[in-house]
Image 1 (cartoon, rainbow, N blue to C red):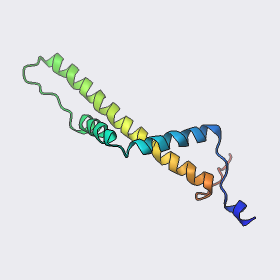
Image 2 (cartoon, rainbow, N blue to C red):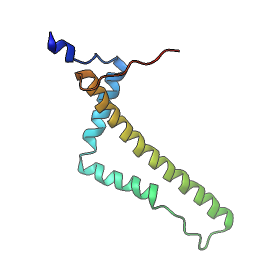
Image 3 (cartoon, rainbow, N blue to C red):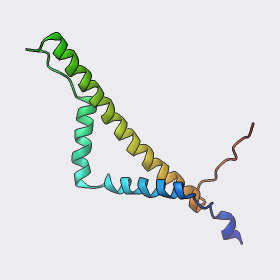
Image 4 (cartoon, one colour):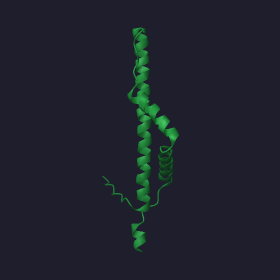
Length: 107
């Protein structure tokens, strides 16, 4: 009976899918290939700049705008992956009873 009290709640189908996806991503981050890919994302996100030499002003502005968006997307992908991994660990904790969810207040 005491074991039942410590057990967490079952996950919904959507939560179970999120947890599997997050753990798949977590596993992926431990591979050699990921180390290469994350370096590309980090370089694009934090080390991108456009050399304006030899460019017309409008060409440089267009290139700079594209570089900005590329950096922004790279940051967002890295953040999304980290959020999904964190969510998977949270949902696992809820499922096994390590994390107790607080009751949401209804208004």
